[in-house]
Amino acid sequence: MHKISLRNPRMAGPFNDPAGYDKHTRPFRKLHDRVVADAVAAGLPDEARVLDVGTGPGRIPRAIADRRPEWTVDGVDLDPRMIAYAQERDLARRVGFSVGDVADLPYPDDSFDLIVSSMSQHHWTDVEGAMTSLKRVLRPGGRLWIYDVRFVLRRATRAARISFQDVRTQRIRAIYARLEAC
Image (tube, rainbow, N blue to C red; front, side):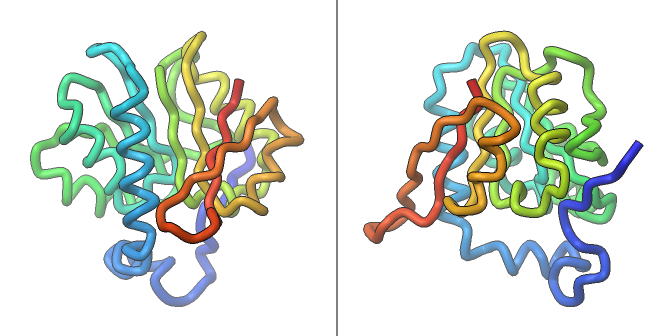
């Protein structure tokens, strides 16, 4: 089994420290708010199951669980320190956090109605393997949304049928996009 690093363990700075990484990613709050709003507006049934891939400090799945407590929400990240940090912040214990590789997700086939990932795909070294794994755990008719910087998302187009949708978080030209796997 090969491992895909979502964050470079040799990189200095906030990427090795969950609390530092949490602070480092605060500028993405508008994008994170957009991911949560899109998920909540997706029209999923009350018994829906949602996964956040590359969850880091777990802000997105906690926010989704707060807005839709009837859903089962999970977050997965390759770094066990990030998962421990996310679990510490999930005081209500409403999100299931797991350590896992995006190319070998620790979930059964057809587990999720919606899978989201934000600002993580640009770290994936095996996008094709990741897309295969993501589609495996997605239920038939489910949705897979990957949010990242527009030019980076083009890598995933080789791995799956993808459509681009600009994601505006400010009034300026969109720098983020959402890929939606069909």
